[in-house]
Image 1 (cartoon, helix red, strand yellow):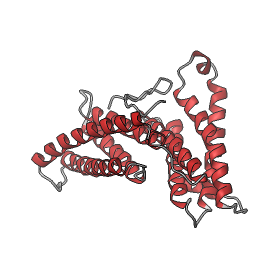
Image 2 (cartoon, one colour; image 1 turned 60 degrees about the horizontal axis):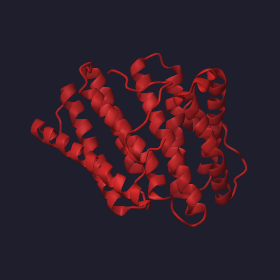
Image 3 (cartoon, helix red, strand yellow; image 1 turned 120 degrees about the vertical axis):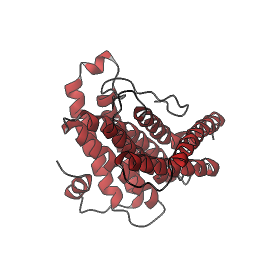
Image 4 (cartoon, helix red, strand yellow; image 1 turned 180 degrees about the vertical axis):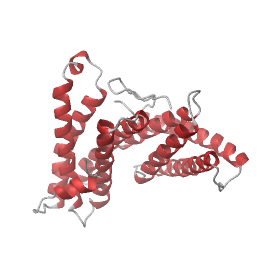
Length: 279
């Protein structure tokens, strides 16, 4: 699979909303604090600390200016510090077991886990195909964290994040899925790279399903339908490639491919409309 992600290049999605050695569980457990703060204190800490921490990682991975490119070493250290901060905030998020913040904190902790594991893979693997998937996961995972923090900040005051704030991460995830889908039909694609891309798409679709609690019910429903159809498509494509008996026929697979393309385009159109309405 030809990589469409660039370590130091700009990654700008053409969607209107997108303006911009241990497991993560082990890291969280190892840094877990004995002091359990109140839910409101935990949320306040995340809102204050997570945004600059995630920004430091993004600046290291996706910087485009001449200045930041000459500061790679310093930015790498800042990214590692930011990652440590996110893991610490995730640790605190997991201490909250009851209350209205719990669902949002669980999503935040899950996204930190995604970013942690992807960063580790990206900085340690020697396989280009793994680096490609990892940088994609970092791209949409960091965007999802931005939306998570916006949601928590709004919930602090008894409100909800706007559609634009919530959909920032969704937009990045959809963009990543489109890149992976395009790589499957690339002239340089192989059976192995197609399977790898489909596995990535399944994970990305699952991320969409985990973030369905947006402020617009109609969009949530359409997003859920698309994600579930995309999972079915990717699973069955891999079955056909691998010689495993699929759950649908080739004709049904072709029809579903067309359907998901229409659903994706409809989601982008609806997203654009809702973003312009500033709801």
